[in-house]
Image (cartoon, rainbow, N blue to C red; front, side, top):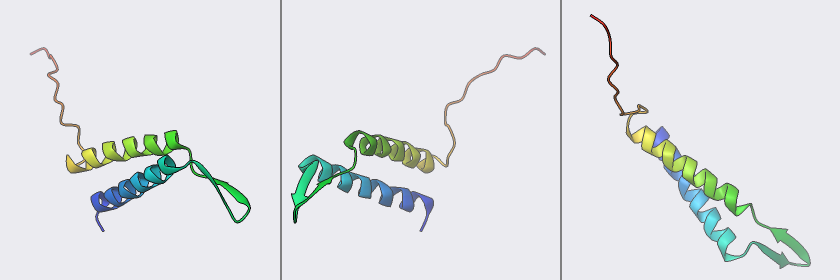
Length: 72
């Protein structure tokens, strides 16, 4: 599995987690109360993974170039 595929797989899992959280943050089952993960933390990780995927697609290089003045 390539790094890009691994990142995409993680992103898909975080999207699934976000959907689960949005459908109900806290619920009870068999007399026990359960709370899902923190929505804000999951959304931050989604944002981070999207940035990593974008960088990975660019070969991990920043494509911005700056001219640097020099004396001859």
